[in-house]
Amino acid sequence: MTPRASEAVPAAHDRVYRTLRTRIMHGEIAPGAALTLRGIGKEFDVSMTPAREAVRRLVAEGALFLSSSGRVSTPELSNERIEELAALRALIEVELASRALPRAHMALIDRLTAINNTIGEVIVNRDAVGYIRSNLEFHRTLYLRAQAPAMLAMAETVWLQLGPTMRALYGRLRRTDPPHYHKLIIAALKAGDEPGLRLAVRSDVTQGLRLLTS
Image 1 (cartoon, helix red, strand yellow):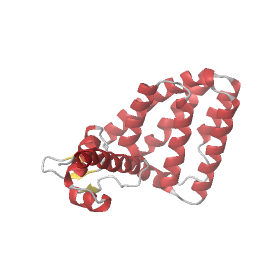
Image 2 (image 1 turned 45 degrees about the horizontal axis):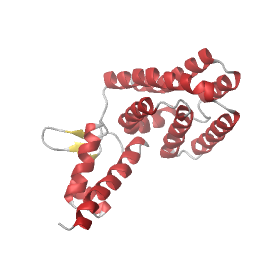
Image 3 (image 1 turned 90 degrees about the vertical axis):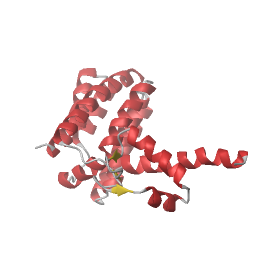
């Protein structure tokens, strides 16, 4: 293998990994959907090696499930698993929001308000993937102010595992307005109200998921 070819494999695997990771996190792939290395290789125009390496990383993160027979699919979460991930969101994201509060300037609040307006637009258009993408952007934008990259990485891993399930949740919610708790989050940031912020974030990240386990 030439030096150029050896450098191309990691680049190809990373491109496949990042694209599939984003799709899964944003709910573009339904729960229980099967993926094949051959299909991935054909779509991304790569060999089996980068396709296999990308799948291996996603399985390790819990974004994909590898059965004993070798079948690769997006996870179909049990009620217990959904409750566990919702509890993790409540723990990690409440702490991130609390750490972000002292650094919450008006530019951040204006940005969160704009994102929330976008969420309202995608809801009107019944755009499930757009909703999940914009909702996660809202949370990520706030949490980046916490300056806690390890904690944010943990939150993103939970989002990744929940992505397909969040798509199913969106279909059940039938939303017509932006999330109520987002407005409470913004209001708490403006007021510098840490208890109010913690409560609003905890409610926002858990109340929807509870519908899936009822």
